[in-house]
Image (cartoon, rainbow, N blue to C red; front, side, top):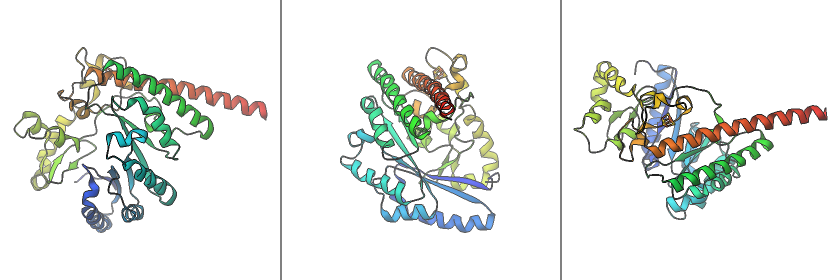
Length: 327
Ligand code: SF4
């Protein structure tokens, strides 16, 4: 691509990318040679559920300075993934932290049926010494009022866990809470800062699109977001890219709406991030339409983050006064 900067990011996503470990190895080796020729630098990331992870793979990722996003749902892992896989993943997490330089992020996903163990699950992961945990709430299944209420309670409990951690270590291990409250309008990176190549050789703005538009080859939406197959795109990207880009450019929160209102009229619009339109659309909604329960989830997250930062302000102040009283 003509506008690649000196440094670029290559993420291997799934399904499960470790099923194609040989292809990953070949790609990395090919790019190392190419990067030298073109004076580029690649930063590699692998997003994996860890089920196929081995010592050999860890050593390869370590040697090639990979970042890793590993799915692990703490105490509910065995309930929503392969039975008995939790112990193995915990072993790998310990190994990665102790014996590698891999920049590790744990992605923990909760659903309406597992949300009741959210806070203790994240605490369990924090206690494994993980310093980057991303909390994901699956929006594939509808969250009813009872599960939203449970989410409220669990998020408040989690906030206390994080504050306690902050008091002792001065860090916030859950990345969703970490970004300071900077107001900005969220836009989806798909097609703008990001392109995805599928195993079949198709180009999309993000790896979620082919999953979302599966078996809809003749639909208008498919055509709006599909960049074409790799060979066609390579030959004609100067024409194809700007046209498709315009469709991806619409995917920002000010263009979204719930059933009852346009998001640009919402007082939380500038705090409402990240809000993945494709994830929201998976629950049979159209792209850009935010289901009511997703909107509620966003509001719960916004509120908890605000309260957390308020409380952290108090912790900082009291430690400042404490320090000055002592000195
Ligand atoms: S909180 Fe709801 S209505 Fe407000 S911007 Fe977010 S999704 Fe839209």
